[in-house]
Image (cartoon, rainbow, N blue to C red; front, side, top):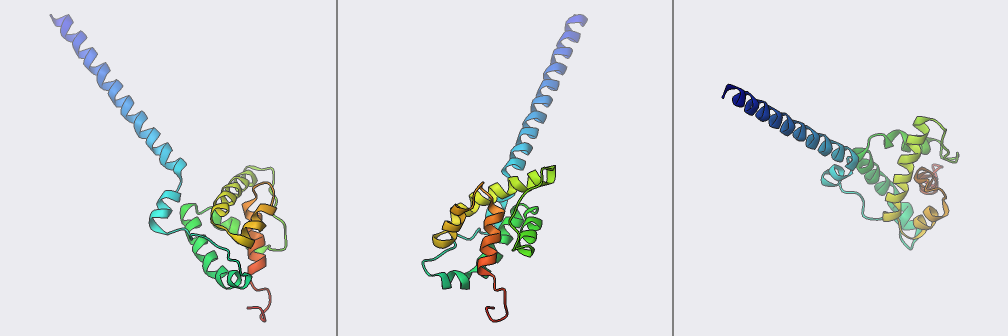
Length: 159
């Protein structure tokens, strides 16, 4: 009888350990899913991504760029703060075509750029969308650089 009791206790202990392991595995999968989803779902709940940018009239795009760029940057950087450095760099170096180093940081920036390209493809219209289509390799940072160069005044007269 004592031996049966010990076997039963071992069986219960094994079942408890298996349940705990399953619970930990489920928690880990949920955490990975949340990380993969990124902050974009959370950003959409907190800050609305601008619906679209681009009109049939270029002067309207010129007038609306500052508001669009501000709203879009807030949403994008809330979702993934690593975009802030990328966008700052391309805006500060608006005369230099965006390329990537063959380093871990360069490849990470390229991956963010590809994601940015896909996001912009969904919200740009008219001339800005044509500009996006002309940029190869899904280089979203290059698209942002060109849009910034096109719509941000370079002289005091334009501003």
